[in-house]
Length: 117
Image (cartoon, rainbow, N blue to C red):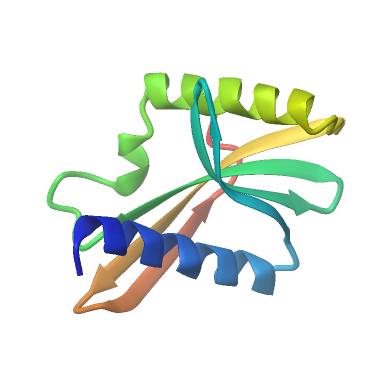
């Protein structure tokens, strides 16, 4: 599996996992002039922007550590643009990270970090 395929696989796994948790899918791979949001979902009345990080190991640190301050800023700005362009208004907006660990093309572990930034 290439890195691109691994990332797509991780996003598919994250969406399936979150749908099982009663989240509602609003969009995937939302691109704006400020960046991209991997997944946008609703958790009850909360709008959630989700960054998915898929890794084969922790050799280079935890996946969530790759969501640095610049990436967080791009996601926040992208969410603001998404909400304005789609006339979406929510009292609560949350930013989550989902880590997906894959070994030999099999999901080993999923970790959902809510309200990371």
